[in-house]
Image (cartoon, rainbow, N blue to C red; front, side, top):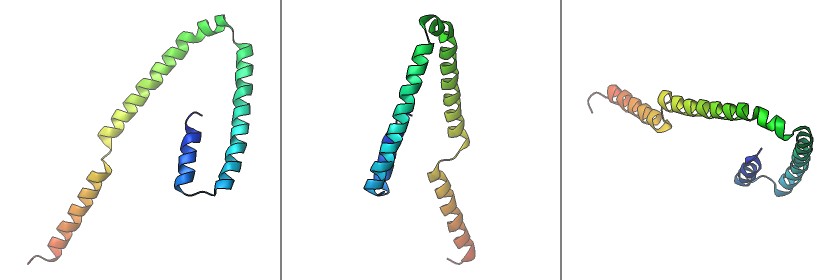
Length: 107
């Protein structure tokens, strides 16, 4: 999938993965995925014609719009229902401060 290999390179570098192991693993994955996508493209290209594409074009567009709407709804739901990490940390620190204050009422 697009973007995965780029993220994998950055991640491998960040965790200081062994360079030669990475080169070997990435090469094998590139050969396999590249060959698979070439085979899939050739097979689909020989099966599809202009009439088939025109016939199903509207379904693909409707599906893409539906997926985009679902993604936007999910992102909005996550923003409303989940607190930010910083908010949770502030609440925990405030709880600890109140507990210490309760343990030492004279201070």
